[in-house]
Length: 150
Ligand SMILES: [Fe+2]
Image (tube, rainbow, N blue to C red; front, side):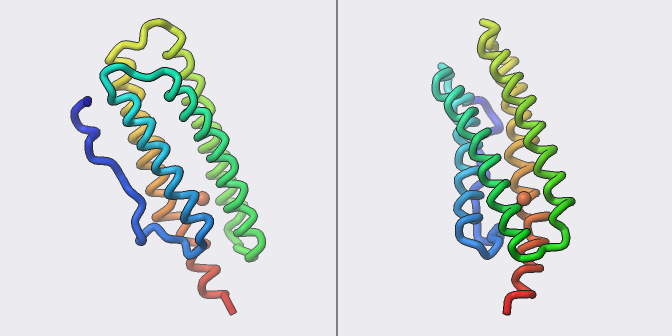
């Protein structure tokens, strides 16, 4: 275990957006990013699991964003377009991250330094980003929809 990554983030009710499917998806996303961190933290990194989890996340992120956007649209949330842009940017970031991950894995030079760099990126730009997104921008549609619920 590499130091400093023991403390993981877990979903809690303060992150709820008041829609069960989305809450479940958020939990799963956080869980899978934590799994990436776990895989990279192990002494012998399991390349198969790393590839599998990385790919699963890519598919699941897109699926989740599409569902969330549909939900905002269905509920006439006025901030939809801006929120969609943020999602699109994150998908692009994740694509680049995956390319980097694949390159690292095939380079035959998967050193502890590379692993450390990947972990930092995952922590900062995937996990922390997602948690801030859920606690911040996602709460905007949650509040709007809640207050317009008749
Ligand atoms: Fe979102």
